[in-house]
Amino acid sequence: MKCSYCNREAVYYQRYSGKHLCRKHFTDFFEKKIRTVVKKYKMIETGDRIAIALSGGKDSTTLTKVLLELYGDRRDLEFLAITIDEGIEGYREKTLKIAKEITRSVGIEHYIASFEDNFSAKLDEIVKVGEKLPCSYCGVFRKYLLNKSARELSANKLATAHNLDDESQTILMNFINADIDRLARLIPQRDQEGLIRRIKPFMELYEKEIVTYGFLKGYPMIFDECPYSYFPVRAFVRDFIYELERKYPGRKISILRSLEKLAESLRITNPQIELSKCKICNEPTSQDLCQACKLVNELENKISIEHNEKLSLIKI
Ligand code: SF4
Ligand SMILES: [Zn+2]
Ligand SMILES: [Zn+2]
Image 1 (cartoon, rainbow, N blue to C red):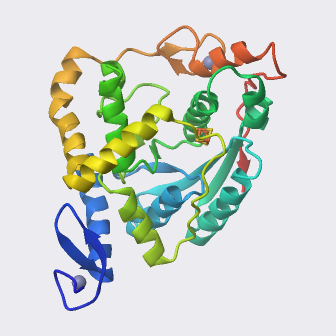
Image 2: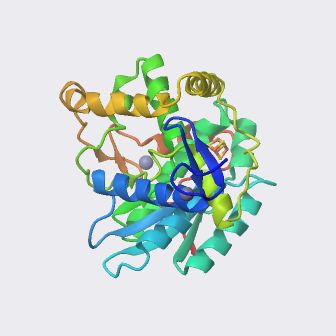
């Protein structure tokens, strides 16, 4: 099949636009989409020091490479990468290795914050005694460490590799759970003290597009799934959206657009809560204790876990 724009062979069929794209036109489309989204949401601005959350998986690897490719020459910007090592044997080692290779290849600082160094326990130990699903612990501790590390490294933005598939699933799940407060947290709001602003340059790109771009560029791509990933509702929503998209291409984007159209109303009905400081660790929280400290309290009678006051970061 020929490209819809030129005579070359197509490498990608974009169902929602009905276009066949050759390598050049697909790459142009992909990079232009990132630039457009970055500009639209003012994700990257003069003077920014941007921490990239780099797990070493396919999405964050591509994010690191492409951000440095598109913006790495700008002298008014700085980039660094942070990897969280949760302590998942047989899984994290592989992605950590890739993460190191990537940061070396693009020449940026790279830091690792591990659960073991910062909470005295690996995720592998936590899941043996915890009553919640592994991701409930992992998600909270990882978010906590990413924010704290980015702040201590003087970053003012934290870039994550969330894509359109992730975003549309999260939006729909919040509707399904009637969790409008959480839905409102997805829209851009004013910055709050202690919280590093998150940016998602891939938010309007399909996961398939990210994988295709990574392959075309020859980036190392790891498809291993975390052994603890178990999201029954999200998996159901993911399959539902997938089927919807298959029959009616473009629905993922329209789910995202629906949230954009609701943004103004949500800012009024669900205004941002003023954050205070956690009574134990001083990190920003909307309650007395932050989620991480609550989980540590819950677990401390079962395993040796403690909240190390000083952040432990290893520079690679
Ligand atoms: S799937 Fe769950 S447990 Fe595994 S890395 Fe992701 S959040 Fe952590
Ligand atoms: Zn072409
Ligand atoms: Zn705390």
